[in-house]
Amino acid sequence: MLLGIGAAAGLWALLCGVFYVAMIQPPDRFGRIIAGIPGPLRIVMAVLPFESMWNLARGGSLAPGDPAPDFCLAVAHADESDSAGECVRLSSFRGARPVVLVFGSYT
Picture (cartoon, rainbow, N blue to C red):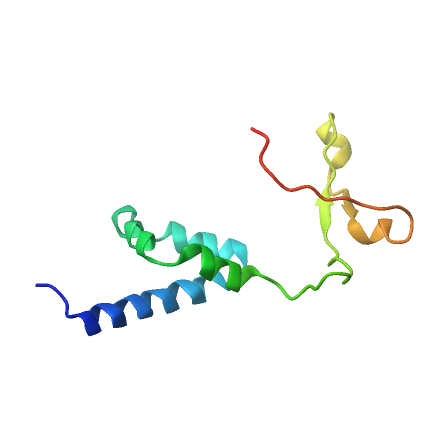
């Protein structure tokens, strides 16, 4: 049985809301939510404005000129035994030298 236009629009809006609530969760929780969706039901995501919702949910509130939020990255050494628990904080470079962060896939 096919849904009427109003019912289909309501179902679409409900799905958008459910996925948006999932998207605003911390990344590890969002990953668990998506991983828990059975494969065949993931096709439903194709009808959602996923990119727009993702940008809205994860856009942040920084404006040009604002200081970057602090974070810590684990140190990668050739000898893994030397880097146990060691990390580099972005704030440790503040005022010392410029830092450029490049995100992307080079594979």
